[in-house]
Length: 151
Image (cartoon, rainbow, N blue to C red):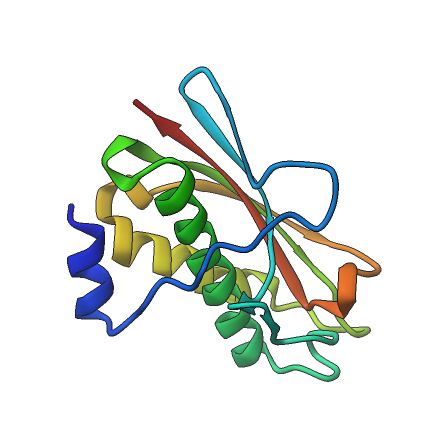
């Protein structure tokens, strides 16, 4: 697996890793597990995809928002851990805010899942959980946390 070759193949470029918005770290390593703080659809300090899925944002926009969150996860891993140390992605937790009667969260979350599989290949296989919440910070539509096994 060569992450940078895969990124180039799909014409993707890692954004700058964001900094924490409070008293915590972006990546917390305990033993051989790297836990990532929530990542939002932010590119180089610019906010995207704010609002509620199924109301202000479409399912397709939610999918793209999740891709951005996944790219931010990869940026954090690149900067704080190094792709050469990654054994594999373990699990992702996804949080979303939606309008009434919208129920397409699995389709949206596939934006992150599919990106991880394309870029990390076999190491991108993971389990996931999806949580609908009342609100997210700064009115983001989605957020994503992840854990990786590392060497």
